[in-house]
Image (cartoon, rainbow, N blue to C red; front, side, top):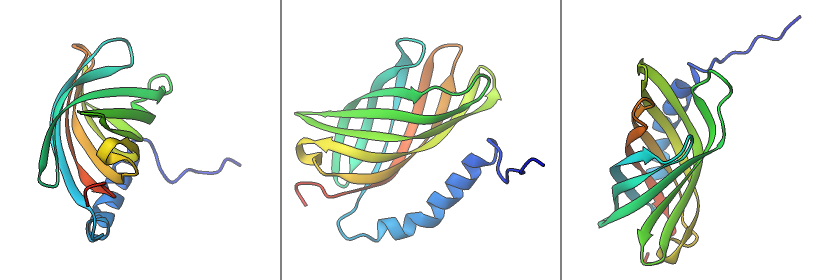
Length: 162
């Protein structure tokens, strides 16, 4: 007898989003947390990697960043779930944030997909050395044109200037 799975790929984004929304207030209450929000555009420079520019606000500071996104683990054939994606945010002057997370590309009008997921901040350099946090990502992925637009929001902790 086969065991039945209680989730499907289509329900996972809803589950993760619900968990993040429910956890958000608890994360934001941490005294040294700074809110993060921003948006940007990226273009594919090969079959799996995207790079581009984004505006990112962390607390009261604003940055123009260079963004590199690379799926570390490719989706299974025919799937729209990327189980491991790394993002590197280069904020200039030796300051970087590197995240790892999961993303889903949900068909809107293929080849256009709605993009959603989360990113855990796993390391930083410069004033972001030791930083940790959680970011939500949403946007649009156009596989036909090789472009992506993203919106990011979340919380970051342990900045050097705190």
